[in-house]
Length: 352
Image (tube, rainbow, N blue to C red; front, side, top):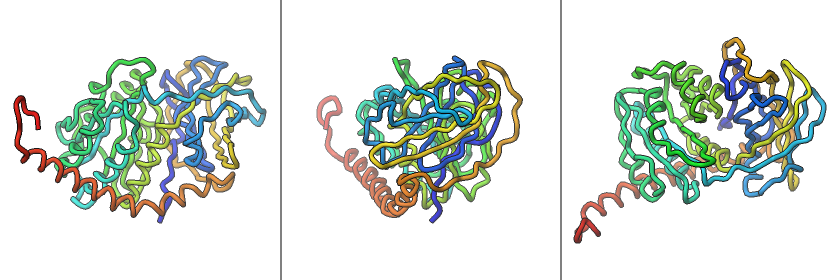
């Protein structure tokens, strides 16, 4: 079974919020954003390897090099109390693939802590809000279980519609998680307009796309512009992909350092604790708020080696089949529970 590899694309952008990067993955470390707007202070949103997720890491666990020279870093863990997530689901897939996507989304929801605000949008034409923004995570499984395949693939419109589901809050982290089976076919929203909206609102996008679909690089481009990741997997790998997205979102750190160079710079990021390690490297333009020319996206080469965490994605894939079965059961249970609730006698004011 292939390992699902999260990657940013190599692309230069004119986004004001942070610089585009080309991330070369080693181990299971994910860099979602690089902020150069406060140069020489550089900020990076970093998720450590999966095995380090339960730990509360300090600055000593992280390391950064700039053109091969070590830099002093600070690291602050993001509180999950400010996390807001809108799930966008592409309905234009065969029923068996749609059921796999439902199982993956349900498994993802079960991993979220209480207090996470969630919403669910189906990317039909026009998009449908299947679950308005809510803190009631118990309501989400029934909403997912009631989804059905449909026509249209208005991914951009659905992501744009997600903006209305976010609520103002201190330390809010706005995130859209998209399942897409192929290229957008129905949206009235243009990709560049969507990218501008995501960047201006500080919304990150994580896309899980079918590897056998004609998905192109549009969502990967949006993720590179706004922050986030894009991954292409087989339908049998959807649960594992969503599990990793949950790991990343729930275990992110703001890592900062003071840069000493200008122009293109090679950054190395590492994390190590308790015998577990992960590394990554990226090229970034160390200039503040300077527009750069857009180039064509390029696939990222994966690397092997660099600590115990490197083997973790392989181990994680062994659980995907079992998780898919569990996800399918959750869909059935969600539907059965809803039917039972509807058939139960009601008391005064609709109480049960």
